Length: 93
Picture 1: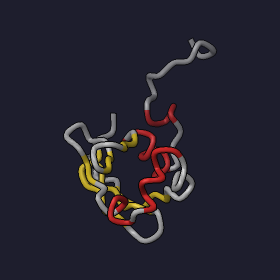
Picture 2 (picture 1 turned 30 degrees about the vertical axis):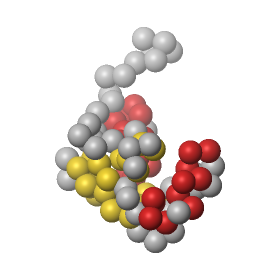
Picture 3 (picture 1 turned 180 degrees about the vertical axis):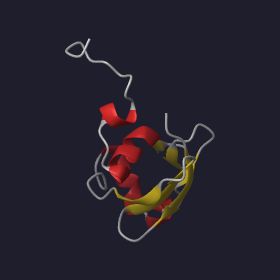
Picture 4 (picture 1 turned 90 degrees about the horizontal axis):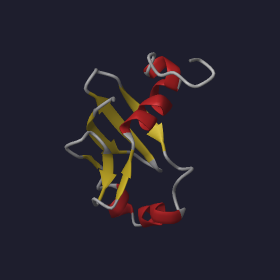
């Protein structure tokens, strides 16, 4: 599992992330804004409350969290297989 260690809000619905392995950069979350639980982000102060919890998840107000691995994949453009090379699917087994 990739552990996020720092998160900062940016303009729009973008966040800057830094991971324990040194990878850092911006992730655009605008595709989530206004949908389901992410409607809370329409209050800009909620979106700006982004932080990393003890487990390394990226979270807002302790009500919304995103998987750090999924965000890492978006940030780096890597595939699940590249991130977890020992992962086997039934086709690969």
